[in-house]
Image (cartoon, rainbow, N blue to C red; front, side, top):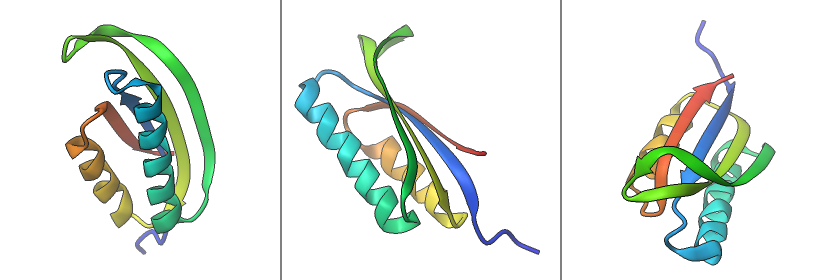
Length: 97
């Protein structure tokens, strides 16, 4: 039997090149997208600004956020695609909990 829904966790490292306002806008944009497609975001952890283990696009720091939500299996793939093509997102990882 196929899964109807599952819990997912998304960790995103946002670029600090656009400033704090740009980061806040992206955080809210993806939170709203998750709420629209998957329902409520159960946990939205802001880890804040952290030093990267290695430079990504000549940046040494990023703003980390973790989203936890429950969704049907098709939405996380779409979310991952959107994260990969969005300017201001350095890295992202979608995992099943």
